[in-house]
Amino acid sequence: MKTVLFEDHHYLNLLPLVYFRPVWELRCGARTLQEKIEAQLQKRCYFLARKYLCDFYLENSRCFDALPAGEEVLLVNGRWLAGGEETGALKRLEQGAALLSGANLLAWRAGAGAVKRFVSEEGLDTRAIVETHLNSPESRREFSNARLIEYPWDAISRNGEEIARDYRELAEPGKIAGAVWEGVHVLGRENVTVETGAVIKPGAVIDAENGPVWIDEGALVMPNAVLEGPLYVGKQSRIKIGAKIYENTSIGPVCKIGGEVEECIVQGYSNKQHDGFLGHAYLGAWVNLGADTNNSDLKNNYGVIQVLLNGKPVNTGKRFVGLMMGDHSKCAINTMFNTGTVVGASCNIFGAGMPPKFVPSFSWGGAEGMAVFDFDKAAALAEIVSARRNVPFTERDRAHFRAVWDLAKRVEAGSLL
Figure 1 (tube, rainbow, N blue to C red):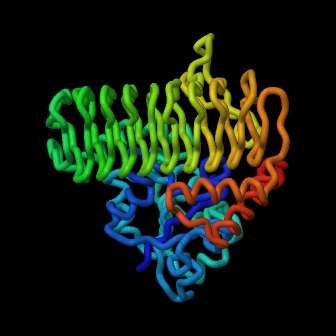
Figure 2 (cartoon, rainbow, N blue to C red):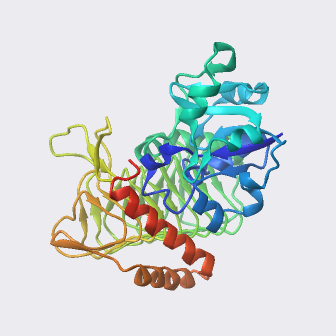
């Protein structure tokens, strides 16, 4: 039986962070959602995603279409942070049965031929499955409190507990395999892991008294940086001189991070090198924040924050929500982002004053007005930035970029919402 991660119409609530990736590649803790599910089930998963992701991004041989109609499959929701009891129920699931959380399909065991009837260009039509195949009580089990990443701020709010969970399951506490120079101060050494090739320079402070600090392979912590756990620093990432990295922060691979950062997720290959505050934020990949960029994550009246997601108002139910910025977006020096600002994919933000709280994908400008960022120029910039990290930008990547451009225009025109 093959295990298949799926996404459904709920991916729209995770834009702009999932324009360029399926939902299961979002990071929460030290690992992506996919890495967690595969570790729990001890299975290498197949993928049922938006068509353009299978065409231009994912490994074709691992996409659902490659499976024969007679194959038995276990479908698993790619947004699900399954617990121990839920993982056990997944492994015991019988043919034709499903796990649900309210209206959300968590898992379904069925033949690939039956599943194919519910596949569209947008992923899996889970609403139709629930309505037509899962009407009887025997066919379904409810997990009312299942942990699903419904919105970007769900990943941010769960990040600290997930760092601790990933650390318990994967890391070797107290392991110092990298170079820790004399003059580094370590608090709670039993909760610190420094992997092979990582370097921590003199004057750095590692505080793991309130949660683990995990420095992955090849990472560099420069002098006088202060790192507070729970914290994960990804492979080949660099923490700049004098940085202040507070709790519940995950930094993906090949990032440069400086200034003040608190309760944030950075997907990977992104830069926030300079002074400035980033709090309760989620940055996609290939993002660059100019020097002294700041975001607000708390309203002056301490009220609950409303976010414009895909241009539509959503009540987050939270008092702390910062910046959410899609892949390949950038901002100039001294940019100021309001509380709960959403910036789409491949934007270029500059100028005085705060930009709007919702910036559509492929936008160019700021508070004084926005223009459309020409597709060819946006793709050319992505190619330049990729080359700086020795990552090739292929014709397939360009087609992927074009598919994101097309989807963004449809979403932001309201045709898919």
